Image (tube, rainbow, N blue to C red):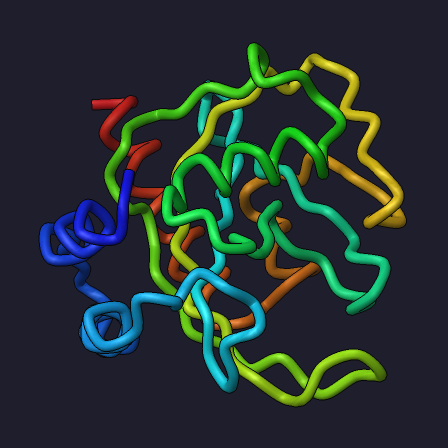
Length: 187
């Protein structure tokens, strides 16, 4: 995947959520205007990749308690110049879960969700924003997920308990999309 392929995926991404629709539009304009959008050194905005990890029944979600930010999130991270944001998201998932890539199943190559969120200034970086491109991943929830040193804990959370760990708007969107997927499986 290259920058143009990501732009094509974003242009194909349809959402019923108005906030996400605005994020998609903003992401497209930003990526078109900045060839270096995949570098974390691009301030005040750069592209990141993450995954929304579900089990096969779509009734559990994998969350990580991020050590540096002290919050629960899905796996993901910086592209560090790699324009293949899907590869970035899969690599970050493998690294942060501690699982080999053979245990990580990409549900499809379509964008699952797009979010733009602020990262507060810290001792290394000024305040900035991430344009986070998210893909849907499936992992067998019977596997031991060891995690890595970037997280305090990695756990499977029942779908209806996720908001107890993270109740931000983007998590709500991904939960609603997962509920729709569950309904499609049940039908």
